[in-house]
Length: 324
Image (cartoon, rainbow, N blue to C red; front, side, top):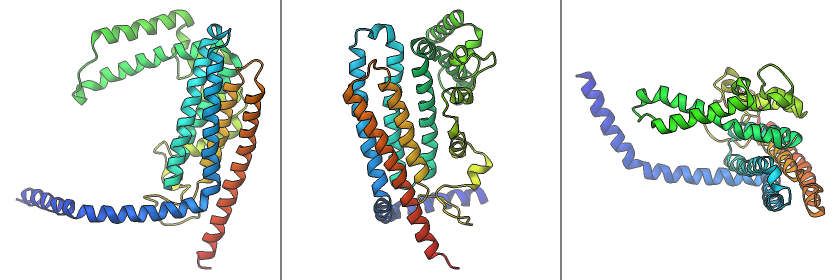
């Protein structure tokens, strides 16, 4: 009897909520429009500069990519050019995602996306430093990841009710896996960064931290850990929020106008590294591309200062509104 009453109540109340939802939705959209306008007014200078930077980077990357692929030695560097061009395109896309999150008031989500940006910058710098051979290993490692993905799918598909992979696909994944293991050895399949083991010169299974140190970008380790809190379900991610300025009992369950400085400035710095890695493949680099890269460096400095100034103004305004 109780279950029957619960079922009826849930159905009737949900039907009523659906009838009233259009009015509620319009009000929420009006509130969000107002909030995002106020946020944009406060953070306009650094946000627009970051958007300018990604536009410059995209245009520069397109130009360099075409020049590299048309160069006389393109065939001898096809892996490194392809990997860095694709990494650069992905970095530009992620900056757009970060901008969308920042403009909507989700600094913690933007910081989580910067974590990926940092990883791309580190890997791109490492591949640019070591050239074609390591780029080919990086590309070959896709066979390892594809085999792992196929194995995971096969383990999960019965409980999910999915169809198993066709035998043809399983055999193709196994064949590609066996080929790269035969070429590079069993250590190649250990961990997520087996492709970098040879060039790191370490017998143990390589980690991202090893690659980060090899290209001397490990001074962002603390920021990377901070960003990781917004990816994993660890306690720090539950109790710490960039979107809250000071210690508070308020639980942030939506957007906030605080915390934009770290992910915004971080996105600019990481995009600059990925762009520099791609431009650095040109030997010798053209005058125009060097000028464009220097412009991005100067703009990156301005972005950092603008984000810092906006954050300081927000802190001052917040402190003025708080009771003594």
